Length: 187
Image (spheres, rainbow, N blue to C red):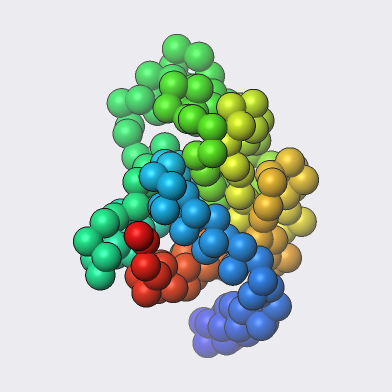
């Protein structure tokens, strides 16, 4: 067990060392821009990434804005199980996020997709629909980045072949961003 823990720590810290600070800055500035212009930010992902999307939406709604008295308009498309199961049952699992974007998304809103592999069909389809609606798109992906890295407007690619470390970095990057945003002036 000790070896597993040490390997995990090593993988996590090596990946952190490779994190592109400029990409994190771009990510933070996109969120700040959406916040300042009252655009909505949408997040989506599957499994652990879905849980991270909910966590990030929580942090950004309240945490980033408590000093400014104005939270960020942000929503996790993963959070409403009734909507997810309805869309998966009536349409397909591939449509669970894109159908929500079709209804809610507006030009200049921001879609953030979280994916370990970058190849989940439902997040790829969400990016495609968001781009059709003239939304901005950003992907946080692991492994080789997959299709999401190629089609999103911008991305943070963590070249790590470990799903748990890739998911850890979704939160690490977002927590970095939330702390930076909490010190920004909105008006």
